[in-house]
Length: 510
Image 1 (tube, rainbow, N blue to C red):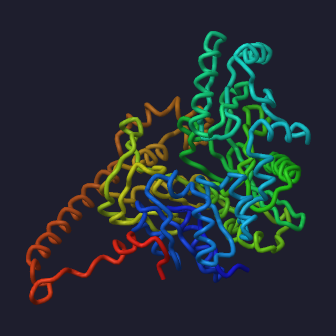
Image 2 (image 1 turned 45 degrees about the vertical axis):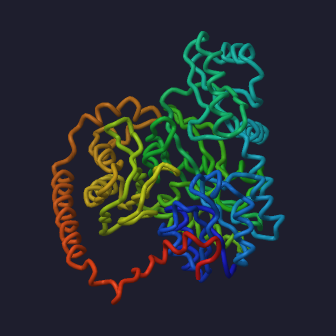
């Protein structure tokens, strides 16, 4: 096993990897930008290296600085987390060329699955069903019109180099196609520096169901079951769960075998996820493979009992997977809500500021994967996700009820968050029945937002606000009374904050 690992990320995923390393007896190195000098992941790591100014383009996306930090601290391996450089083939290759272990799939597998068109071609060559569409980028609008006419409208235009809804356009009529193609190309260029766009048939009201896979370097590839990720807004996942109400044991077996076939064809190792559309008739279609750890991996961990992050580390260190496929079945139900610094009542406008008070939910079956604490500054440099709240229950009904209770218990003062939005979703009759699809939230959002917040959450927020105001008044009184008394005789300066000192040092923290 490794003695020291560098985590090339920030926030909750950096803390998640740090904790997995701690349980395996591995020392950790954090990297951080000037905006994250006081971030929890910096404090929790054994060492930390400042890698640049706040913009990610000058810090977390600077692969050469991250590799230099690994060499400086003698880290044997790099874990990329998700986002940032986690799916960049060139970075995985550069890490390997530097003599450092990459905790993820081989660079060649990332390259094979990094382009959606290449991934579709690989799937077709291996007998994996895909949504009818092109396997090569579109040359021009005329070609797009001919293909769309063949498939019939509506169709989807999708960026070949990325996801998250960037470079994606639904086109319902021929007159819209040329303009939509140009807009998709512009957005794809901006997001991925690649204007390649392909076309596929639009599937009405499908579910988004993905399969988690684990593969070692000894030939074992396993499916860890499915995750339902249909609650999305503008192609961004907001709530995930495992298992799915729409997946039977037989369908789970078929989808799992398909995902394993895709992973084997790509020469895959480590953790990855195959994403599928599941239509109303029970037919499923391969979309893409995410060659990294997924944000929603905790729901799979809770229903399988398998620590995916620890197995990423173990696989990268050369260990064999000890599980058999028939042993991996879901037990109970898990749900995850992404807690973001967004104001749902104001078109999910990002919210910034300092978190003045954070009270975490607790109790049976409640897990908090967070990257913030009381006093954390929330800015606009990075993704608005603050944390993930995950619960486990014996069945879906208990999991939904438990999630609602945990959300009411959660208090975040200082910035607007998605907490109340999630409470309203848990109260929604259609959600509670599992009657969801990828377009469900867009159809249902207005009625969800119109619903008044629960009495409990209003009461808890009012009490928390009153207590926080009283605490702040007390703190100001103590501060006023202590002016001058805390200074050494004859004047002088108060001892500097060690974290402020750390921000001035481009090097290591012991």
